[in-house]
Image 1 (cartoon, rainbow, N blue to C red):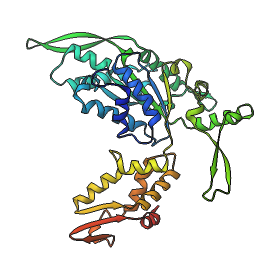
Image 2 (image 1 turned 180 degrees about the vertical axis):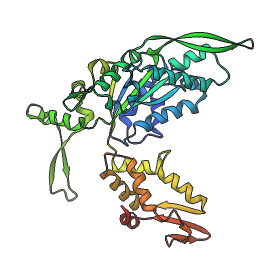
Image 3 (image 1 turned 90 degrees about the vertical axis):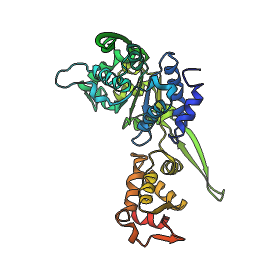
Length: 366
């Protein structure tokens, strides 16, 4: 047991309430988080997933989990940055200090007027850093070297592996301000790096489906409704086949990848998963829309058939994942949001006004 958490299973249960259709990834993340919180060899994480599969959602919900539980207060120093910020084109300096500066600023915000050297050290060492679009700092773009990407990866190496840093801090002692220095160990910081890694899927598939590796592909047999026809289909999941060598060829240096215990591939969302995200996620566009119409005295509802069609259309836009739900649903509501009271779609029964989105309405707009 670690501070406020009994096991990785408990962490998984908390995170899976808000992150949908990513159970395998969340189990791995829960283990790394537990190790981080127990000060057991930090297992830094590399997340691979198309836009909209949940990378940022996972980090936001880690932040929420720490913020909502007073027992986990020493882990509340979490920051999110774009990986490109760690390289400075003008000076060619290694700007890992940007990450430390952000952690310091956040620690001061959390402490407020109660500045304490020990608490400051704990907030830095127990922090979680999420670096997004880490695939954009690849060392190779096409057939050409990418100096900025190489520089950015190098900037992170020492910091992620762990170093002792001396940081300035001003504390109040007996009513007087006093400057002091605090030594922090960055090896305890958990780094979660994420990226879409466009093109990686195709590259790994070409490797696996080539002659000598083709028998590695899982065969999936599909029987139609009448049980009179069987189709054989290759099932390929990046999660099953990606190797560190694939990442090297993509442009991530061996030294950089060596800082990560886990390469986690997020699922492309299924139609069922998109339906659940639309209705159940904390940031669901449907919940936002329901709140909006409620303020106008209208109960917004959607039929199961309408929801399924909306999810199927979003699934066709797999490159943007759950984000497609928002843009498509906004198209369905276009015009109705402006003046719903005059819309023929709004029905009134026993004093209750209802706007019901059905399959036909979805089909007309998406």
